[in-house]
Image: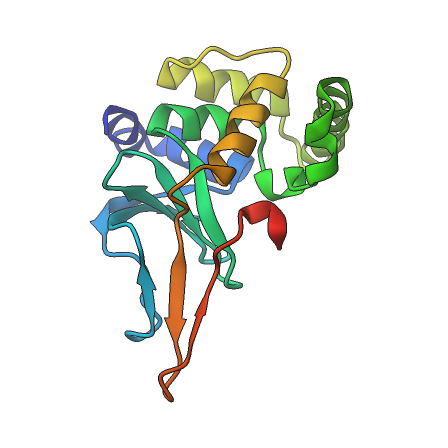
Length: 188
């Protein structure tokens, strides 16, 4: 929770995290989205952040981080808050990294991650933001080592999405039928 406290106490860092990583830290923890009582989760937790599209990042009772996507996707994405912030800082707009085939070969993953970062750098540069500088500032402010290569971080993310117990959301229709997302985020 120390990392969240650091962010909440610095409006400039909050804005930078939102711009660079599409993560908006909430002023306080709150119960996760329930879709008017239709949505339940198999692991209790509290929402600490949102994405711009309304998706939520949930601190689960075991200390890991769950994700509930506004489009119905969900799953575990990090084993701790530190891992979460390390991940989103190194891999902004992380949904672009959900290509399971590249995780089977470390060199291919490294190249894929580099291509994603280069594409993002160009987009941010057009908007007047130096992405590497912004990432370094966020990392330094949170006491996270900025690594030149995100392959190890991405492998931790990949394994976290696959580990048991899965973070599962269940939607119950008005007629009592249910739909559960039991796959990993890679099985969209």
